[in-house]
Image 1 (cartoon, one colour):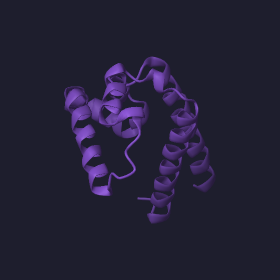
Image 2 (tube, rainbow, N blue to C red):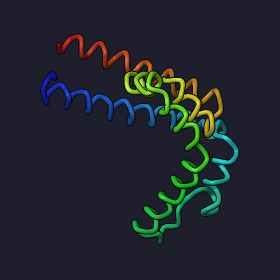
Image 3 (cartoon, rainbow, N blue to C red):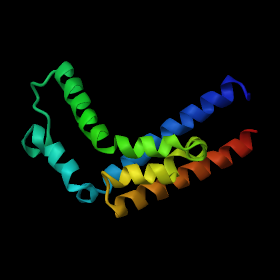
Image 4 (cartoon, rainbow, N blue to C red):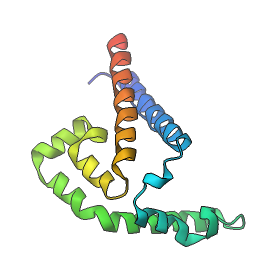
Length: 137
């Protein structure tokens, strides 16, 4: 509707927010605010929560997919419930990062303080994107 330039800007800003939020949350050292089963899952692969240096890319990717399957296996029902209602689906499409279904899904893996930190950082980013789009459009 607005052209590829606006779509590209939206994509770029979305990626920047995601990377920035990840860096900020990572620097806050909030690993203690993950649910216990997530930390156990992280620690189950190798001691000290680090991947062995001799692990190749193929093994790392397989390990990642294995962890994703485990996590999705624990939250899939909440995803289906959130998407099954048309109104909720529209709401998720408009503010996916801060929607109620997203918070319910995140609550399965994060403790409330980390969810609040995530929501504050993403809300700030979304506000900045809004201001940027107001300037561009």
